[in-house]
Every structure is written in structure tokens, then in C-alpha cells.
Length: 347
Image (cartoon, rainbow, N blue to C red; front, side, top):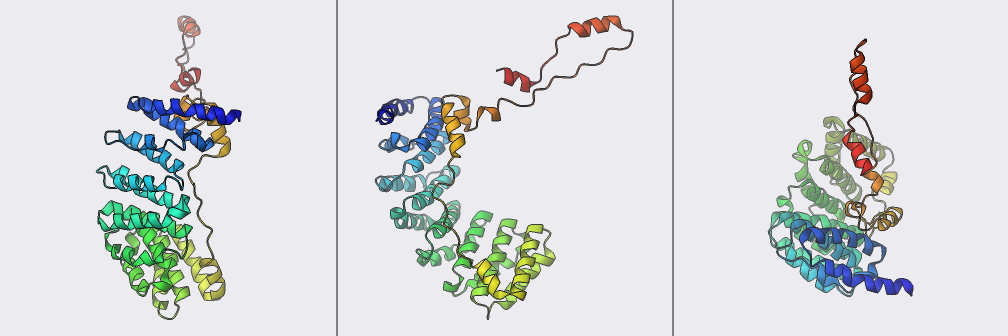
């Protein structure tokens, strides 16, 4: 009861700080981020104060967005989604990207809202804004990982935007989706083959995902994809200089040639569901930072030892010349200039 009463009293002063100038707001938001990770109930009724204003600086917008996701629940998800969809039409590219990712995080966090979030993401894809489409594909991949075999009906819409994807993460996500649901996509082999044309120029992330996706496709449809899998294994093991790609290629080749059943168990194994909150601080670190609330540690989200105690060094003095007694006396009384690290330590 004591903790509950104290928690109720914490809310009004924290909300009041958010009407200050941007610099004070930022410090308050960084501290609030820690507080709600420890005790989310403190501000669960105050979602509206974290809605972004048009004239907020970008660093305030991004912090508010992060806190909004932490406070999202079944009770306020409709309100939050409406806001996030609005933010996704802003002009600031970084803010728009984070807003689209936030919609995906809402879907993963609040299962009952997943369908509504997917519908919102499809609406955003229809805008045909390049960076919005790419972020939407990335978060839909995460939604598929959280809710397998539930929303595959939207794959057709995603495939229509395949040619517009030019960022490595978005291309890798789309390839993962095609490989994972290859048995339900009639032209999966043609789609994956289109990526092979520039295989050597692709980002390593895309190359690794493409290799795995084609092996998955082969294991699901072995009769008509044999040439395709041989082609990608040859590219990965003979033409690539990336050791990770080469090693994975050799492992797949050995598995497929010696024991296809084992290959199926390894490559098509059931994957664990992704966690709801992947960016939470470690409990021990969070407890330490809570003890340093209202200090630099709570703004940096790092313990004081990470930025205060460094290597304390002293500048070396030139040695005195032999027989030069005046120099020796001066050296004895000279003040040694400390390195900046030691000055920070003293502070």
C-alpha cells in the first residue's frame, strides 16, 4: 500500500515536467523511461501527455514514441494506433521510420490488436512512399515470426512491392517471408531467382538470407528447384569472399548431399516466437540506474562507472639533462598537467 500511494504521488510532478522547455523535457523523458520500466502503473493513465506535438524537436519526438510503446495496453491501443498512423505521414524520415516500427511493436505487444496493426501497415504500404514501404515490410516480418501462419494472406500485397525494396534489411525481410511461406507462393522460385542476378553485389545480410530461403524452398519443393539450389550454393561457396556465407553454404551442401532428412530438421525447424519487449534494460542495470535517477547516468542509461571512471593518466615530463641542477629544481616544483580523463574522474 505504501508503494502504491507513493507511486500515485509521483505521476503529477512527472507530467508537469513535460510542459517545460525541450532540454528539461528530454531529461525528464529519459528518467521517465527508466521509471516506467520498473513501475509501468505509475503513468498508465497519462498516455495523452506523451503524444507528439508538431513543434517538438526530433529528440523529444523519438523519446515520447518509445514511452508510448511502453505504456501501450489493450485499453488504449486504438488511440495509440490512430496517433502512430498520423505520425507515419510526417515529413521527418527518421521519425516516420520509427513510427512505422512502433506499429509493429504494438502488434507484438498486444496480441488482440495485431490484426488492426497489420491492416494499418497495409494502408501505409498503399501510400507507395518508399521508406514507409520498406519499414513496413521489416515489421511485418517480425509479426509473422510472432504469429506464424496467421496473416499470410497479405503476402501477395508484399510481393507487389518487391521491386521498390532497395535497403538491405527490407530486402532480407522480404526474402525471409518468401522462404518461410514458399509452399504457398506459386512463383516463389522466380521471385528468389530474381535476387540471384546481382548476388555478389548484395549486402551480406541479404546474401545469407537468400541462401537459407532457397534451401528452404528446395526442401519444400525439391523437384523443380534443384538447379536453383545448386546455383546459389555454387555462388556462396566458390565466388564469395565472405567466410560466414561460405561456411553456411558448405554446411547446407554437406547436409543436402548426405542426409536430406537431417537438413529438413535443421533448416525447417520450428522457430521460437520473438519476445514482446526486446529493448528492456537488464534488471540489475535498471535497479542501478533507478538509484541514480536525476543524474547523468539516468540520461545516458549507463552506470556511472561507464563514463566517469576511465584510465587516469598523467602527461609524461621531459627528463632533466644530466648536471643541470636548475632543471632538476624546476622539475621538482613543476605542476604535472593531468589528462582529461583524470579531470573527469575528479568531477
